Length: 257
Image (cartoon, rainbow, N blue to C red; front, side, top):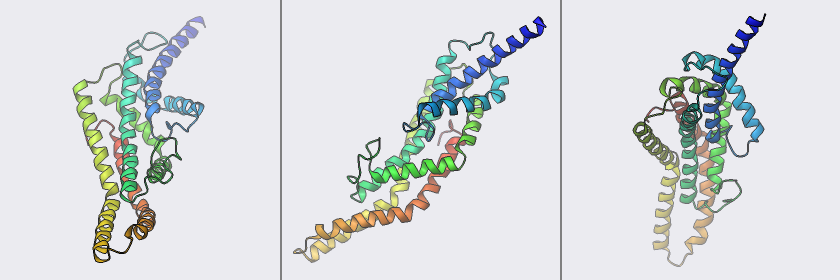
């Protein structure tokens, strides 16, 4: 009986060490993860979600982890796994950041940048907050937790446990990810930029034709109404486009866009 208990205790220690190593990666990812990692989510909910995801991922990745001898992983895991989790979370956060930038560009183009600018925890225009909230909601409804578990399992093939990622590879990957994020932002905000260009051209022609007319009093309500109406028309088209980019980032967080 004592031999069986000793064997069971040793096996439990190995599983505890593996679960701790996986939790280090998932917990660091949750610091910057869209949706479940937002500042408005209570800390207990984040911790419970991270523990639940750890329980799902650990049995799948335990055979690929280095052999551990104690109840805790080696000391280097506390750094390497945290860095790996932050890298995965940043890949997804940059995709959400594209929605924020697109909303800011659209608000600036349609003169809506000052309307409800401080109503959200992050100082951003209301248009950006609406797009970001809609995008995160769409991602959660589309099964963010399932795709996140798959991404965590696949991440161990690209970022092995206990190994430092190559700095030059991470640097190049980060530059490409940021560039792709801003490119996606401009693509999403393109309808608002085109509408703003046409509006300003029409306003200039009217001002030339009728100098005595105060075009600012006519144009300001028109661009405000037009920006809100354009958001109503374009949001159902823009958010699915963003969701595809978000799914690509979830499927391959370390892939160069």
